[in-house]
Length: 172
Image (cartoon, rainbow, N blue to C red; front, side):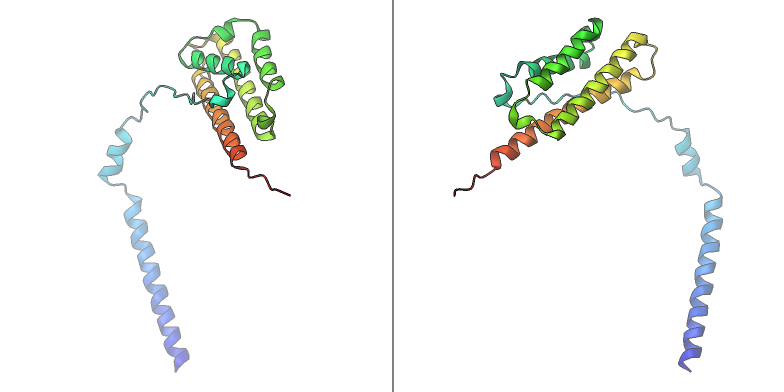
C-alpha cells in the first residue's frame, strides 16, 4: 500500500514537472516585444576620465624614483606622452631606478611583481604609441591598463606599509 502511494505520487510529480517544462519552452521560443526593443538600443559606454590613485604615503616622499613614476603616469593619463617620445633608455632607467632604490619594507615579491606588470604595460603602450595612437585599436585599452596597474601598485604599497605598521614586536 505504501509502495503504491509513493509510486503514484512520484508519477504525478514527474508528470507535472514535464508539463511545466513544455510550457516554459513554448513561452521562451518566441521573444516578446521587450527583447526586440532591447536589441535596438545601442550600447555605448560613457567616456570616463581615467582616475589615478595618487595617494603616496608620506614616508615615501623622499623616494625620487617613485615620484618620477607618479609624474610619468599622471602625464600619460593627461595625454602628455613625453616618456614615449624620449629614447627607450629613459623608460628603462625609470624602472631600473625603481627596483634598485626600493626601500627594504617594500622589497616584497608582491610589489616587485606589480613593478614588472607596470613595466610590461609601459613598454606595450610605448609600442602602441609608436604605431600611431590615433589609429591603433589597442592604444586606449593599453593606456587604461597602465593606469589601473599603477593604481594597483599604489594600493599594494599602501597595504604593505599598513601591515608593516601593525606588526607587534614580541618581547623576549
